[in-house]
Amino acid sequence: MADQQFYDSPTPVEAGLKCCCPRCGEGKLYSGFLKLAPSCDRCGLDYSFADPADGPAFFVMSGVGIVIISIFAWVEVAFHPPIWVHFATVFPALILGCLGTLRPVKSWLVAAQYINKAEQGRFESVGRHDYDSRRL
Image 1: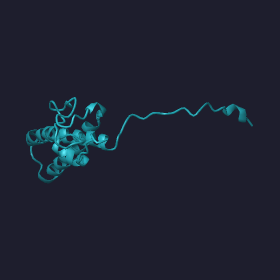
Image 2: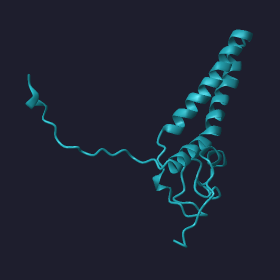
Image 3: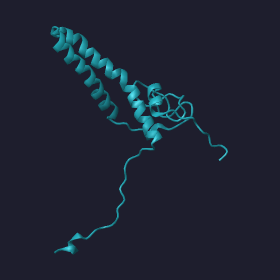
């Protein structure tokens, strides 16, 4: 018990913005652009528990898409620019917005999984119910 170490864990949002370990707040979370490292290089936390799946991509595409397309629609109604202006501004904004926010959102979801101790749901069988015995 004396060997147990206590960490001042960051909040999920702090860990997400810093893209750091959700336990110690100092180690690197990624070994590539979006590839999670096997474990924290500072505290040794094994990241095998983390499975954000498609959640980060969904949240990023939805959030960035709503904001950028809303601005696009307002500009179109207010100023009626030529189509090349939209191609030159909207597509780069969508791409850069999504790529710029994907890492922090994925980090935030991994930190939320760690802090909330999220795991795959399991169902326990409560036995067989015989509903046919109650026929009217």
